[in-house]
Image: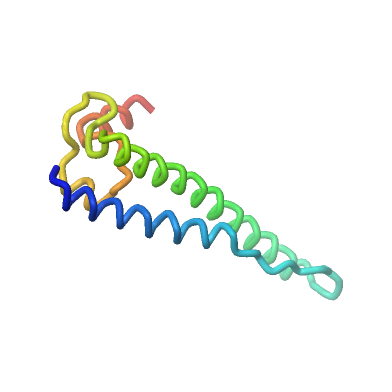
Length: 113
């Protein structure tokens, strides 16, 4: 992978990292009281809070992966499969820039789960 491709991925990953950080730092509006709500309203509110919690958890996990990819750029191992050490295809990196594994190794890992 040449320097211009690495610089492009660094830019993509840095922007994604900053976007995730902003989203995670946003305060969710707090509903102070449940008074006056019926059971359906409370259930909807509870479900929406649970969905927001799950989304934040996913975003935190993705942020860790993006930061790890930025670290791999800095260490010079970006684009190298962490399992077989072969080069990860540019098409895969374009689709998922924080990929740690080539498609073959990723499929093998997924089969084991």
